[in-house]
Length: 244
Image 1 (cartoon, rainbow, N blue to C red):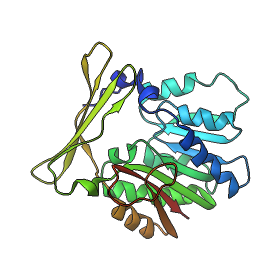
Image 2 (image 1 turned 180 degrees about the vertical axis):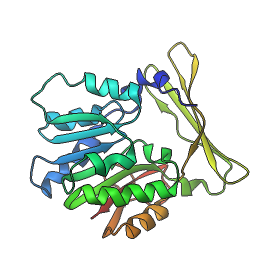
Image 3 (image 1 turned 120 degrees about the vertical axis):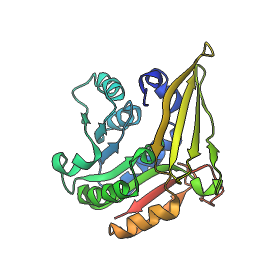
Image 4 (image 1 turned 90 degrees about the vertical axis):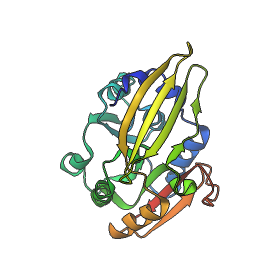
């Protein structure tokens, strides 16, 4: 069960755009000619995308959650910004988006784990490579599942804002598959379900490396955070930058 409507009101608070994020993404102007062409996959409410567009970059966001997409489109108050949002499923990217166009394609906030399986992630990388301009990169922000070993219950760090707390736990089933439960606690201390027993693909850093190699990418850099601190393997999450 997927009740994203219970999260929408608090989404921007729980997944804010930090100064480190802005610096991380705008740093690509040192490599590519400005304006940069960004593609945000599973873009949520579009907060980061509007931040990048206000800085003069060309931004496309795709999202299949209607409630999130509605909020993203409501932000488009100015027709002068180069930004657009589409309801689109991942396998349809190469049908509707420009080939060899994007400098940076990214999937943040652990949304990659909601891909159906490893094959879908591999197909995504294969397709994304076709959409990248020469020298482009793909960026993932992911939970470091290797840190948790063989634990049958993974309790992810709580995300917290002034008005809400987001609790996430991942269960390993008897057949080895994994499901996630996500609940939100609002300011009235009421617990609302966001995701209940939803299957996830708990992909690891080493698996991302394998997928990238199979898709023909030249290499991959791992960071502990958007400040580009080294990833040691002990952190709760990591940033992967896959180089074409």
